[in-house]
Each structure stands twice: as structure tokens, then as C-alpha cells.
View (cartoon, rainbow, N blue to C red):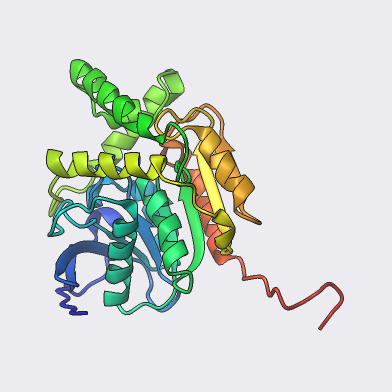
Length: 300
């Protein structure tokens, strides 16, 4: 594996100011940003459909990065990363593995949203020794029926957004009641806080390739989620139109010992709408000491 890092010195105070960096792994140049103190187990952020480095909410990244080393990156063929978008979620997971190993990490925590959550499940399946903890948000299991509805829902909301001259995420990520509309506007505004060194948007070809990978994930044979033994936190809104909330509940039932948080009156972007509550829960989860399964009650 060939690595080639170009990392400017200096530590940013907020994700909106985090310098752009790059590293090469298995012939692919990955664009990434990092924030927070180094030395502990890093938190790798796996991003959602059509997302780039600029799609992460600073109000979610910054609180977690106060005491954790946070790393975000562009998937292969997206934003400033080179190559072509893989045709499957499993290939995306292998890319994530190559990227993480190129950075020199043997153990990571994974923070994954939507498509990223699918990649995270596959990563934990293929490389269980790498993943210490999982945070899965707005996502679903392999073989989840109606996962392929993501495509028509996405195109419909993109059209609705175009007619209203809005950001598609206002429709895709938030409910259309007063609270949802207000949260959507605030979220989109926060994404514009970074004014320099912004990432390149995803191309339409890459976007279509990601949609196809999600469709294939949903139509594949179900994964045995009993193999996920890592501590897992699952979060979603109670009205997720993109990846229905019932999939989060299904993950919770099938991943032993997992925890589930459902935010009322929220959709796919619940973690952005309820960012204060969510980051508090995520930090507590990440900081919780691992359970020693060799100990029994009353034992030594």
C-alpha cells in the first residue's frame, strides 16, 4: 500500500476551518480533513449519499472533535478524491479500510450516516478487528425491503427543491412542518460557513453510481448482523422518508446490545436538527469504557 500525505501544519478550532489534506492508498487519492486532539482512537466519519467534505454540519463535528480525533474523507470518485465510484457498498467499505490503514490506524470508531451506515456495517463485517465502536444514523440493513425507494424519493425531492429554489436536503433531510423547515434553513446556512477551500460537488455520474450501489444493497441477501459485536449506537428521526425509520428499529433488534435513539418530529437529518442532544449522546457513547466480557457479577 502506497501512502503519500500532504498535510499542512496547524490545528483548526472548527471544522469549517480544517485544512484540506490528501493521502494515496492503493492508487486512489483521498481528500480528507481532520480536527481534534490526536493520540486516542480516531473517529472516522462515513458520509451520506451525494455528500462531500462540505456536507458535514460543523455543529455535529465540532463538539465531538473537542476531545476526539475526527477524520472526514471523500469516498473514491467523489469531491476531490480520485478514481471512480465503486459499484457496491462492499467495495466502498474496502476503500474505507484502505484509507484508514494508509493513515496508520489499527483501531477506529466509526460515525456513519445513511449510505455511510451501510458502508460501516460492511466494514465491520469484513474487518471486525478494525472497528471498536459504531454509530449508525439514518441507515438500514443489507437486504432491507424497499431500500431501492431511495432513488425515486431522492429524484422527487430534488425536483421539489428545484421548483422552490431550495437546497434538496431541505426536503430529503427534514420534515415539512414549521419546526422542520426552520431546522432545514439553519442547517443549510451552517453548511455555508466554510468560505475557503471548499470541496468540489459530486458529479451526476458519481451520484447515479451511488444510487445503484444502494439499490443493490437493498436487493441483496440479508447480512447476518449477529456478527456485529461492537458497541453500537443507532439514531434516526421518527419520520425518515429516505431510509424508513423501521430499518433503524430492525438494526436495533438484530445487533445484540445496541442502543436506539429516535428523535420525534424529525426525518433523515435528525442528527442535524437535534444536534445538541445527539452530540451529547454520541460523546457519552464514545467515552464509555468498554465492557470486559470476561468479568462476571461479583467476580474479580
